[in-house]
Picture 1: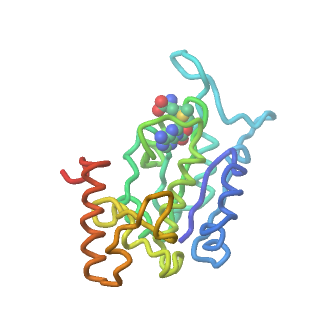
Picture 2 (picture 1 turned 90 degrees about the vertical axis):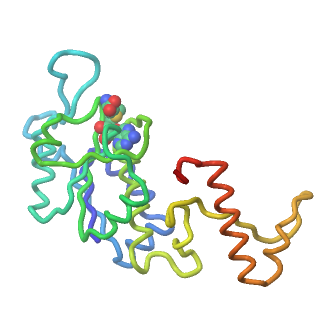
Length: 222
Ligand code: SAM
């Protein structure tokens, strides 16, 4: 899979993309991540990517021309073109699965008060939000999306770290996990997990997952 990120701050993503699971996936060629900086597509001396909002008000808005030029430099085969935006469709595991099936996507990171609306209409770009809160830029949301998508790509996660049982994979939360020691500060691991009886363990995990979902996210159970 190929992911291109349109950002004026590629440095925010470079560190996390070099570490751990993402770093290994990139090193092994399972996912390729490129950057395009809208500043490289400005024509003025100050390489200005923002301007005052029409209609007045505080803050600056990202200009359309450098973003259009940056995105269009990737060619017509850039795949789904996504603007990270708090006003977008909320990212969930279903949308992550949908994106992980794409061969290529392009992510646009906003800054300041946001991006000129013509980016959404004219490119066009679909808007995706990582949640109902506001961050200062689209780089961290882009990273969230990249990490969520990458861990679903074939070969990225080994058997021992399988995502099949992760939260949301079957519509409920993951079951609680325990490791050694069996007893810690007076808290004991449920007996059944030490029993070696796989059918019993599976039954316990299913019930514990449902119980946790009821307690923490009853909305998932409808
Ligand atoms: N004025 C905008 C609003 O209220 O919708 C917020 C702009 S925010 C300060 C700047 C940029 O951060 C946005 O253009 C977007 O790219 C990114 N951003 C902030 N919160 C986000 C979220 N929850 N999901 C996705 N992107 C977000």
